[in-house]
Image 1 (tube, rainbow, N blue to C red):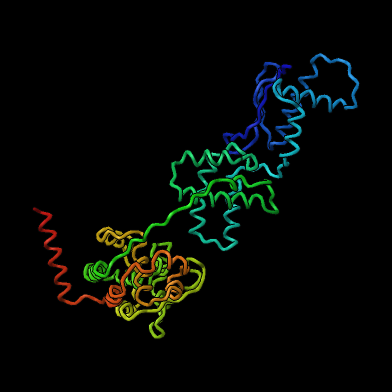
Image 2: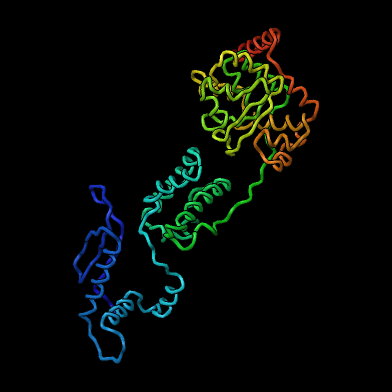
Length: 403
């Protein structure tokens, strides 16, 4: 059975920027293009045109309990299925899988609402920023699909096109799974099943963390003290207190931006640094013991309540990290390894670093010999002789570079 109606429904953006639903195609050979405010209105118009089109076809007498409207619907269904599909199989599949959507939203329509919900549960702005980066591109790619129309294959195809490493795939899987769980939950209930639930999750083998040995740690701190003394508090807190060093979003980055108030967290009398929940990555309060050498590094700056985030801080930080070839988290890794080696308590090191005992035991225990750790915790400000040696070493390097 052929039908003179060929129509489709798609979301359309008007020149004014307003979104609508457009029905386009042909009716009896005449091109049709009409816009509607909602998809149900557009689908209704499309169905009416399809029903009207079959009224002109030849009818034969048949005994049936169906109403005229039901007969028209059946004829329209046969016309759309074609000769290769059974209407009974189509009905069975529909009854098994269909769930009427309660919303006709695109992913992009509800992302801001999702981010607000995340904030209400205590998720921090840094994580919201990461979520936004992860989901906004996916929203652009799926702009022609309503939320309930997105299936597992759409997600897998999107991931396959990105050439991501397994860890990045896992991160996206977590983000998109969280989004669809939110769509599924009450009071929204926009979907019945989470299409991200069956996305594969990769097992990531974590390598041995890179750390600085005693000599490298000493060279770093002496270099900073000589070359850019205002940066000493940042590097001392990262290396000898293990505070997560990322700037500006990490724990130490947030502390650095507190200005003079940062020193209120450092209690020399009780020999502890207090990391409050609003700064701690885990959202939990913790304290870090101030070791004698750390106190010596910090006290000259504490007296003046000098700002940790000094002028041009990021540029100066980047220069020192490049000069000393410092990796992303090497200072914190060094602290944890040296701490557990010196004090021989996995639990204590885990508490002070804000890690789990399992992580400390698996990745940091026995990374450093006890004698090495003792020397590390004795690193102090450079003497005049040591500064002189640094100057001579730099002069030799400059001379060699000119040859």
